[in-house]
Image (cartoon, rainbow, N blue to C red; front, side, top):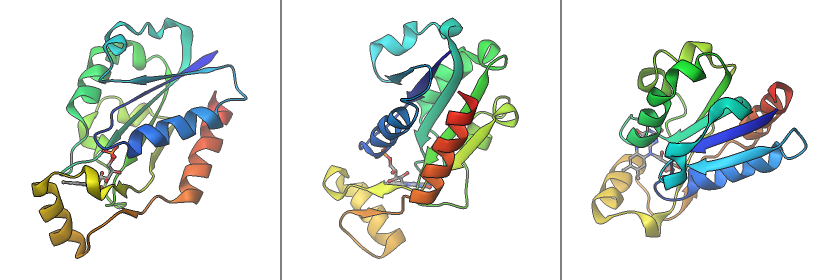
Length: 160
Ligand SMILES: Cc1cc2nc3c(=O)[nH]c(=O)nc-3n(C[C@H](O)[C@H](O)[C@H](O)COP(=O)(O)O)c2cc1C
């Protein structure tokens, strides 16, 4: 059966990660990629999918509201499916999806915090101040853990 990846992204890093995961699943029964901000997200029919992978960046300790709302709306169906979560963010030790989706999280078959990327030119003035205060640095940076990404994709391929 096909897999579905539904994600949110503010600055593009989670979008790029979702595309990378989709490429990784290329050899399986097929994969669809949906940005939750896209109007077609509301009309997605989960019936055709065996595995649903949901991803979001963490901002100020929280998951993206639109992706949380999408998952909540489809909760009854998602509880009956194979589901997996991925989260982007530089605070590798914290996992915002646990509190964002408390009824779905315990049933997830794969969960990973993959690190994050700062795309400096995409930050607002206020975001630049926050990032400079927290990281003591400015400019583009990445904490994406390549091994964690590869392990997560391998786990998904085994589930798909
Ligand atoms: C203002 C701001 C707040 C952030 N807060 C968190 C956070 O609470 N936890 C975390 O792990 N990462 C945090 N990050 C890092 C982002 O999650 C990371 O940059 C991520 O890759 C962004 O994904 P996106 O490009 O898809 O929006 C924050 C970044 C910014 C700019």
